[in-house]
Amino acid sequence: MKASVLLKSSLLTSLFVISSCATTKYSEDISKNNYSNLEAGKMYVVKMKDGSKNQKMLFRNVDGDNLIGTAGKKDSTEVIIPKSNVASVRDSRKARITAGAVVIGAAGVAALVLSSSRAD
Image (cartoon, rainbow, N blue to C red):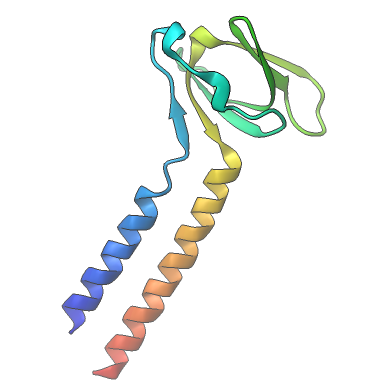
């Protein structure tokens, strides 16, 4: 009985982890990259190809070979990132929601395992 509950709980946990992929990766060939899935007014974390620090930005638009936005909702400093330097773009809101779902799911699985171990 315990093995089947642990198996089910680990399967459920792995399902939450797999569903947490909220990153869009971009290739070396800039012409193949489609930035149309980025929405204006949303916060994104941009990972750079050159290994420099990740850049948070409130996305505004794409202008030629650059992504344009501001440093934050309250900080109006303009941020311009060349498309050629973008390795991946992550929607920080989706990542937070998924992390919360994983925590809630793990708590549920722990409660399930605990209640089944007391039933024996």
